[in-house]
Image (tube, rainbow, N blue to C red; front, top):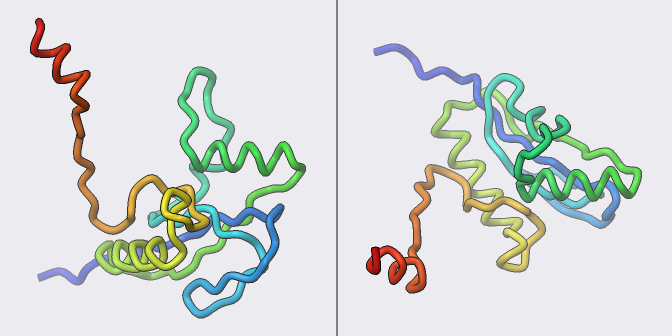
Length: 134
């Protein structure tokens, strides 16, 4: 059995326009954590590029746009490196849970709770009725 690759990491994108004190993975930061993600290679850079015309802005892209409009650049921290994918999923989930998503009173714009997460489609009654009428 081959050893598991340890080329994953967990990263955090911070908003330097909002100051305060946040503790993440036993380190203190003086800018607001806005996003937690896991990746391999240059994944952390993907959010920082200017989106192509017509591309829907994700919540983190909107947050980065707001930072830049306020003349601040997002600050990226590699929280922990040399992880297996499973370790990265677990740490990502733990940090998202600890800091909280905006929708639950936290600071993060993450849409998903992190970790190994399978989105579910929720049909509204209106959409279900439309489909039933066809």
